[in-house]
Length: 414
View: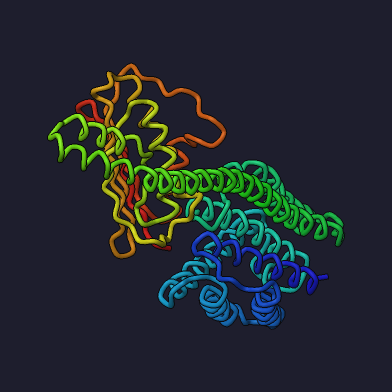
C-alpha cells in the first residue's frame, strides 16, 4: 500500500511541476508523446529515489535537474530561468515538507514514525502533496501570464476540498497513532482520492475557462474577417473610382488652363474629396482595424490624427490588436461625441522599437460623460486591455489631465 501511495504522489507531483512551469513560461510546440515522455522519465527517476531509504537530498537534487531540463525542453525558458525555476521549486518543496512535518508533530506523531514506511509516513506524503498543491495553485494565480488560465475564481471551488483533505489527513493520523484507533487502508484511499479530486477540479475549471476564451477569440476573429473583407472591398472601389475620375480631372485641368477659371479647379477638388479614403499603414491587421474605426469616426464627425510606424508583421496577435485598438478607439470616439464638433479630435500613436510595441491614444472628454453599454464585439473594457498588455509582459498607464484622457501601453515580444 505504501508503494502505491508513493507512486500516486509522484504522478500528482509531475502534474504540479507542469502547472508550476506553465504559470511562468509559454509552452513549446511539443507532441503529447514528447510531453508524456519527459514527465514519464522524470517521474520514474523520482519514484525510484522515493522508494529508496536515505535518498531525500539526492531526490531533491534530481528534482532540481528535472525542473531545469523540463523548463528548457517543454517550455520557452532560458538557461538561467530554468535554473531559477529549479531552485524556486525545490525551495517550495523543502518549506512544504517542514510545514507538513511540524503539523504532524503537533498532532503528537513522533519523527521516527514519520520517517518509517508505515501509515504515518503514507499519510504524511499525501498531506504534504495536498499542501504543495495549494501552494502551487496560489503561486500560479500570483504569477499568471499569458500561457495560464489561473485566476482567483479557479481557487474558490477548490479551496474547501483542499482544506478538508488536509484536515482529514491530520485527523486520521491523530486518531490512529495517538488515540490508538484501528487503522484501515481505506483511510489512505480516501485521502488520495481527495488529492486527485483537487487536481481534477483545477483541470476542468481551467478547461472551461480556456473554452470560454477560445469562444471569445473566435468571435473576434470572425468579426475581424468581416472587417478585412470590407477593407478590401473599399480598397477596390477606391481604385475603380480613381481610374474613372482621372479622365474627367484631366479635362477640367485643360479647361482651367484655357479660360483661367477657378471653377474648374474647384470641380477637381470636389472630385478628389469624393474618393473614399482607405487607411494603409503597412500592416494588414492594423490597417483593417483602423479603417473600420476611421469610418465610424467619420460618421461621428471625429477626426483622427495618426502616427503609425509598424512593420508588416507584429508579435501581437490579430485578436489582441483588436482588443487593444478596438476598445480604446471605441471609448475615445464615444467620449468625443459628447463634445462640440470642433473639439472632436483623437491622437493615436503606434510604433515598434526593437522588441517593444508602443501605443498611445488621447482624446478630450467631458467630465459628465458616462460610457454607454458596449456591443458584442467592441469595447471589451480597460480591464481586458490591461490583461492583453499583461499578456505581453507590458505596462498600461491611464491618465486624465486638463480635459484629456490618455492611454499608454508598452508591450514586449514574448
